[in-house]
Image (cartoon, rainbow, N blue to C red):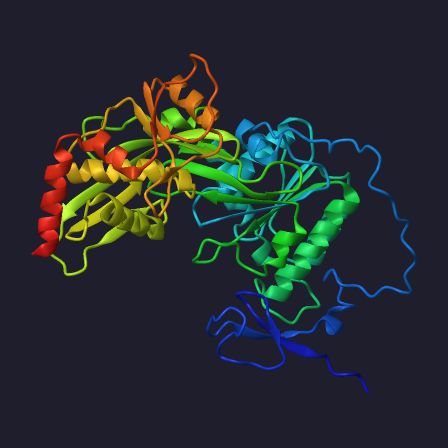
Length: 475
């Protein structure tokens, strides 16, 4: 009598396993995400599942840490911004995972990448699991890439994909769009479930390591912006990239959050045009190109994304509120950080926003998570409250503590050089922190406390604004 296949109940949100079904996952707290799936023992002999039983193992030779190792070879992609993000090019035999919201441009970027590989004489294979081959051809014609010798396939069966890859010569690049659409024959689960995604990823990554082909997997994202499926997939691959941006803006940010062969948190900037994604060599000029210097509530922040200096505009709007609880809205920045800054301004500087709606926006659809943006955001807020425009050639950066002190930021010299290159005359920066001497930087004004920034922005208007805001708070 054949032994019954053992099953388990797996959360589709976090991958936690339990012995019985429940309405709520005890690991992540999500509701109605637990699905019954076949256990690992039942999948061991499944063809194409990536899970095989091995016989008795043999000892593995051990090595020491001493010695020299050559740097991993890289293949230039033909897209300088993508080369920057990956650390100089794609490493043969590596596995990359790219995620992004639907319609953000992932398929467009990967089609351009595969065309660059094919036009350079390398073998590139593009498997589409979400679109038919005719749809991919239409996109290629629209982008002017129809003549590129890219091998195209529309397949979702994992065993068929592996069999295709083993035929012919070794591919240099394999693109799977997307990993959530693949399914293995021996798995009694729907495509996109944790077991299917895990098995497909494991098999494809093993093929990449054994053959030396670069494997690029496309992943869907959840409503929180994270790549869907078990978190273990991000640990299995060598590089994790996120394609960010607002579909209402033409700019797209490709961000590296994990890279075993290069720096993490590096970004590449693209612009969506009719002919596809166009690389932006100087993103600071792009984000600052159409700003209104005469409007109050705008401040320029000198930030660092990875190793790249980037100047962006913070826009603030402070308006009288008729609500009992005024609104606090942010786009491209952490709303909790905004609440903290407003509390510091009230408690340490006597500037209250308690009777006003506050809106803060990072221009261009960029998301900023750097604490050094505190000073620029505060300058924009106070400028809007006092209805006083800031000097158009001022740039700001610095972190603000709960005491109101202005703390130093990293890479100060890099930020100042970028500001000088774009024509800014003065930089309002923290008092602490060393900067190089030279003429390739703007004049600096050092701050030790947030009160000094209020004086810079408002000048003589500060006392009037402070008294009026206090009066509004007492009404």
